[in-house]
Length: 570
Image (cartoon, rainbow, N blue to C red; front, side, top):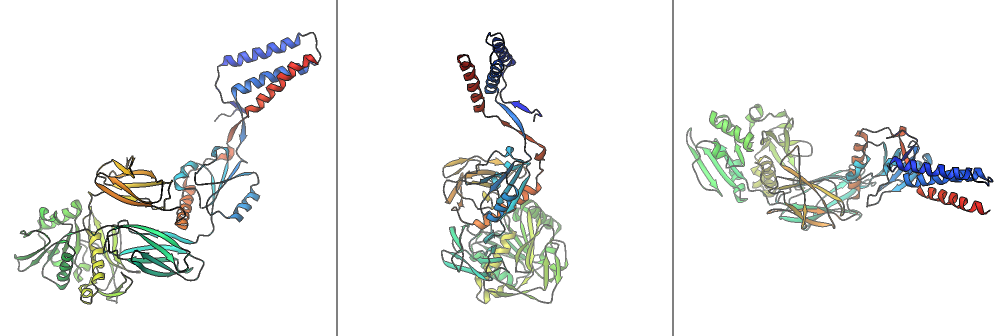
C-alpha cells in the first residue's frame, strides 16, 4: 500500500497532466493581461479551481484515512439485544449490519475493528475474515438439542444408538424417539443431565424420517436415516472342539443368510467341516487362497496357538494386507497373552454385566475383567461405563475379542433379538470392509436450501456425479486419494439422490428453521476456533484510501465556470 497522502485511481499518460497545466496557465495569463483588472484575484482563483476540478474528474483522487477508529458490528442469528446496546454505547461511532440469508457483507477493508454478535458467521464464509481481528461475542444461552451423533451407515436389525445433548431450563423433561412404527425409545433429561442416549433396531431397509420430540410439544426435530441391508458375511469358524456357543452362533448366522464354514477338529489330523449357504470344499489347512474367500475368521485360543508357521503367516498376511477380521473366541487363556491382541485388562469381582441394547436390561456372564482401549484399539460393544468387546487395528484388518461368556443363554431365554444385535455389532465391527462400494461422507452440520452442501464420496466408481440431474464436479483429496469431494446447492428441502454410474446414494436437505440450536452450537464453536487460531494483521496502524466523490469536482467546475462566464457581465 502506498504511503502517499493522496493517490489517483486512474493511470493516464503524463501528457494529460501537462496539457491540463498548460491550459490552466494559459487561462491565468489571459486574465493577467486583461485590461479590466477588477476582481483579478477572484478570476485567477476561479481559473485554478476550474483546472483542479477537471483534473479531479479525470484522475479520481483518494485521500488517506486511518482505520483505527472505523468499527463494524455484525449481528447474526440469536444475538443478545442487551449485548448489542451495551456495545453501541462503548463504540458509538460504528456501523451496524444485520447479516441476512444472502450473506452480503460490507467491504471489510474499510474497517479496522470488527465485532460479531450472535451465533456467528456461517462456516463457508469464515474465509472472508482471514487475517482480521474479530471480536466474537456469542449468544449467552442455547436451548434445544445442541449435539447429535448417529451412525454413518445404520443397518437393518442392528442396534442403532442416537446420542446427543439437550439443553433445557426445566429440572426434568422427557424426550421421545419416534418412527413410522411409533415411539421407539424415551429418556429423561434436565438441567443436571443434558446428555441423552436413545436406541432401537431398524426392521426395514429404506429411507425413513424419525423424529425427536418432547412431551410439551415444543420440540419436533427430524432425523433422516438411510437404513442399509445388513451385510451378508462370509465367516470361517475354526475350533479345536465344538461348544454350545459355536453351535448356537453358527445356526443364528446361517438363518440370517450369512455364508458360514465351520471346521471342528476331531483328532490330531482329522477335521469335520460344515457348510451353510455356500458350496462344500476340502479345508485341511488355512491357506491364503482359502482365507481370501472370507470376511471374518473366528477361532478359539487352542486352534490359534496350534497353527503351523505357514498357517500363522497366511493368517497374519490376510489380516494386514487383505483386511480380514479375526475374532478370538473368549476364554481365560486369551486374557493372559499379548500375541494376537494386546489387552489392557483389570480383574474385577463381578462376573456379569448388564447390557441395555433395546431398553430392556439383560444380564450376561463375563470372564471377570474390565477392558480399556489403547492405541489403535476401539470399542465394539460397551455399556454405559465399561467396554465388553473391543477391536484392534492390524494393518488394514482388525483383531478383536470380548469378555462375554455363554451368550447363547440369551437365545434359550427367548431374547433372540438381543442376541442378534449383540453379535452383529461385534462381528460387523471386525469384518473385512467392502472397499469397492461408493459411500457418502457428508458434512455433519445441518444444511438448508440455497446453502453449500459439502460432501466427500469414498471410492466412487466414476467421477461423473449428478444430483437431481445436475452434474457436480469432483475434486480429489490430495491426502486421501480414494476420496473425492464436491459442493451442491440445493434448491429445495427433502430427499435428494446422488447418482454415480450405477450407484444411487440418497441424502437429505432440511427445512429452514429445523435444528436451530444444533446449527448455532456448531457455528459458535467453528467461529471461536477460527478467530482464535488465525494470524491477525494489525490493522490499527493501517490506512485506507477513500475516494473523493466526483460530484464535488463537477460542482466546483460548474461554480468556477459559471463565475468566469458571469463576471465580465457584472
